[in-house]
View 1: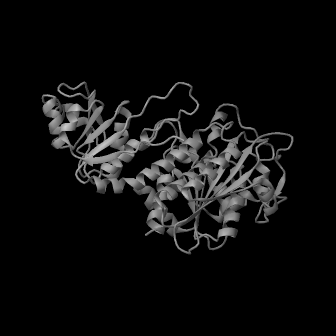
View 2: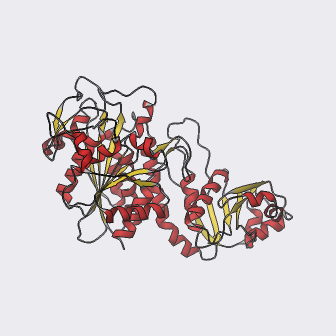
View 3: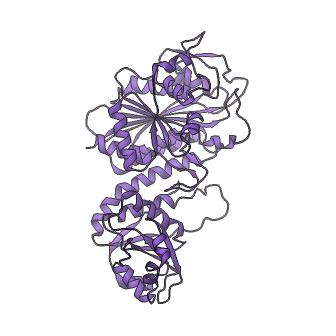
Length: 488
């Protein structure tokens, strides 16, 4: 498990700045006015910081940008980092500024000066989120990561504000680790074992094995894993931090590797299909976050864990399977497997828990990437109120999402000649027909959102708060939504 940096917050001690041997960061607003810490460092550096903020280069810096002044005269520090950040900066800019510091903080300890008490926790969160590196399978010893401390006016208040953010960072890192793991390591069994370990945090966790799934009638989910030696599973995680109310449900697609099955994918890029369990990874990360911060809400997370492989036992194109709901499905393309998994897990969640609402997450379609690229997840919903609550949370956390339509007009594309429904509707409106398929398994009266995260779960270039690779997209937004809507 990769653990995030845990920033600490202490009272201002200007004398400690002189002898600090790591790096020192000072926050300065667009007006160039130096705070207490910056003035102390500037005096020791014979006016170097003042010269920087008076230069043309300073005027070109954007909010959250940094400049590194190496080996400052008069200080023990190896460098002073100047971060352009206003006292009244937005949360987004404060976090981006923290991410900028993470990229230049070096290997030693970092002291951050002159961040406002209102935004210091967000700067620290940005540092923690960006200072992620997945090195579990590298034989070289990882570079040490130093500690991060802030000098602030009211350390206890800032520490209290930062505590739930640290829980979110822990959840996001858990999601990233799961999503980055290779499939020969993160088998369905290993995935389930890592979730069972969350019992230590107070979650109730149970694993439904394939014989139990067969007894429940989950023919849709089970057909996906028939070609694999790894057994299919459903893991149920319950956090009961609220009262007697029914829980809110999160459902994740957990295809630990997707070859496409008999409808085999092209070889180029298939190695990226280790991330096809990204939806289950997000659900797992959110549940860990809720437990770590002691959320005052009832939430249940369910993930369907399968591996989609070709073999003599694998489901064939043209096969007909029966879902837990009882609907029959003609499998036209075995590479449209995620919706087959989600259909049964969603139905099971509603039958067992009668949730107040439900959100599913899945790296479901390449079509959503064509439409939205890697900036936004695709959002589909049957409930304007619920989707409005989600968009408010996603906006507050700066996680990109865009609503796409649902309409009965698309259902005809899923009509089957020999079964109740087929699992694909052709190239036209691919992400929409996938959502229409899932909507068939939403019971009347259940508010529901489908999040297609194929474009945002794992990316080739760094994002604002993450290096290239798994992003942990969704952990921040869903935790925020639960906090705002269900905890009041």
